[in-house]
Amino acid sequence: MSDPATRGAALGALLLAAVRPGSDALLRRTIGWARDLDRLGVDVPLPVINDLGLLLAVPVGQITLGARRHLAPLLAARASAATAHNAYVAAIRTLAADPTVEQIRALRPSDDLIVVLLTRLLGGGRDGHATSRGALLEQVTAQELTDLERRLPALFGSAQRDADLAGLSRFVEGLLRLRVLLDTIDLDTLKLLSVFGQGAADSAAGASALSSIAQVELLAALSSLQANDVVNFSLELLPSVLETTRRSAPGTYAIGGYQGLTRRGSLDSMVLTELAWDDDELARRLLDDEVLFHARERSEDEAARVHLILVDASASMRGDRTTFARGVAIALAKRLELEGEEARIRFFDARLYEPFGGATAHARGKRGTLAASLPHILSFRGERGRSPERVLRQLLGELDVLRTRDRRSPVVHLITHAAFYAPRSLVTEVRARAAMFGVFITPRAEAGDARELDLDWLDVLDSYFTVDQATLSKKDDRAARGKEIVRAVPARAPGDAPPTSIRAATVGPPSSRRITELAE
Image 1 (cartoon, rainbow, N blue to C red):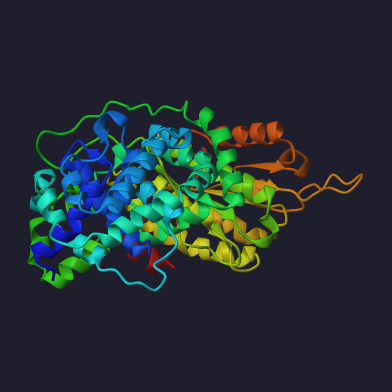
Image 2: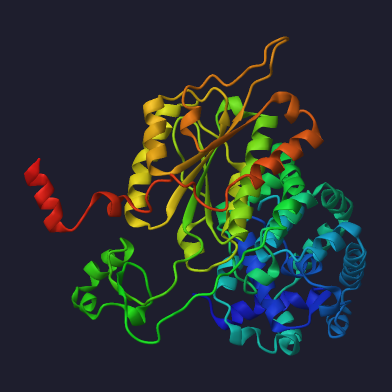
């Protein structure tokens, strides 16, 4: 564990920064960016991280540009150092006026996006040179950051700054390259993330909503042409989706008394006998949702459904089909989120992959779950060919578990290729457990060939849409068809939808169940 003097020496490099934050909260954000960049293998001087990060993240009114007045006497003995620093300050002023920097700043990117952007602009690895800066900054306390501006001159003189000054000189030499990289950043992806709530206002200062893996995937998405196509198509659909508003119905709550028992609730409503379990068993019961809580009388939640959006990621869905399928899935998930319902996007090929969207996070009222999943959705790639039968059998098992533990009605949205050949009996079993809608993308039609859907179970579905290759090849037609599909999801479950709970429909009181078994 490092001592405060070592950490102070690392922080002393901030005296070289050309951007001064207006609050300690912004300084904490700088420390967070530096820690994440160290984990991603980006080794640049701390002043560069501070300056470029604040230029991208913070309105101009909250920062001050220019060299600190205490720095000139400390660099007076070395003319070359003073010259290098003056050139660096000039470079930062140039970047502050760059149009791309201003556009990114206007989107109010979150800390995770700032880390990804800094990696894109500054990254390149350590070239074999190890650094302990990340470990040092992990141990920096809030007290050490308090009144840091006054203590910077003393901290700056406690260590040699040749490496930091050399890093600033390299930054100035690579300024042209950095400005070219700025012009190549896909601003549409940043706009999409801001629409989905991945903004600075949605996360605490310095907090990280994305994992390091998600940051790497977002970095890959910013460089992917396919991801850029998906983003552009999603932005075409979202304006109509954002018109959706959630209507809140009045509810009544009992002042005293309970109506029964439930598997979910707050600690103050937990059944007291649950505390009799030992620690390990109580932890297991909490994880498995087996702990009982007193449930007060209340109106039923308006959001009584959970939506599973299954997106085909097999080889037959490359190109325009992938763009359309993922764009529709993202817009549909956003619409459902705005209406207060839960949506989970799941990819499949020969098997069904884990869901993106976070069920428990949404149920507990946390925001940004879909935004946190967006890097995965944009960069996901399938591993093998398509196997409809295996995918549906896996879905059946998960629906049985879901409907046993969750009172909400599941709804399946299948977005796939027209050649999704599956047994009719298997589709019927899925429909018996969940409402089911389909979107089928037909292959390119030959001359005189209408390429109708050749599936014998379409009548089992609640509704379905077809999209042909001619529609996908025309931008306006593609957007119109996508909006039609997104808007077509019914506000309520179909009248003949499966019962809310398989447990309620198939399992009666113990006495009646025993009588039925004896009769058989």
